[in-house]
Image (cartoon, rainbow, N blue to C red; front, side, top):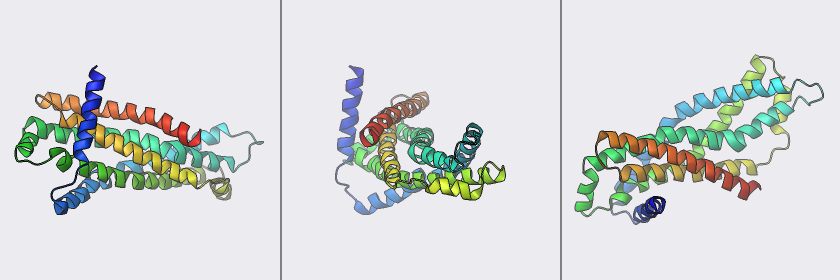
Length: 246
């Protein structure tokens, strides 16, 4: 019963959030602020993780492809597919659920326990629309861009690793990147990133918006936000992959 209660309240929060903003100028300015907080501030950690994961993928794949019967271009092909189809859209989203999700839940949770959200409601302001909707829109706009950057940096990291450690030649790796490339795979990655961004921001906002108690409870809300968002990403990843690629 608790699940249905929370799920119903989550849907009501989204219903209140997706209403018409009262002040459009402030609303769009807030979206820009949230894009910087959610998207631009995440580029550093995403870049570092992507370049090292790309390098590790090449080393591991190169170790497993030492059979001379396996074409040399297979390395670049395998790394490209792994990064585009799974690593950049899914693993990066899981990582960002910890960074962004905990931040959103902590921010809204602090506002709730300090009665700032109650003050907005008393003044007749739709607090869900005022606080949550700019975050959701910023996430929907930022995540596809972050995933595309992650794909480029991950493949670059793999290429540099292959060349620096002599795992394969530059021509063979690039040939693998170009081999049987299906452009829809990029679209698939963007679709997953967009959906995951909505889950991360909305679930984190829900746990922060309805936090109760004091500082300890805000911390618990942040932890719940990360856990539930991560589980939702994994479940939806299975469903989306089956629908689109199955």
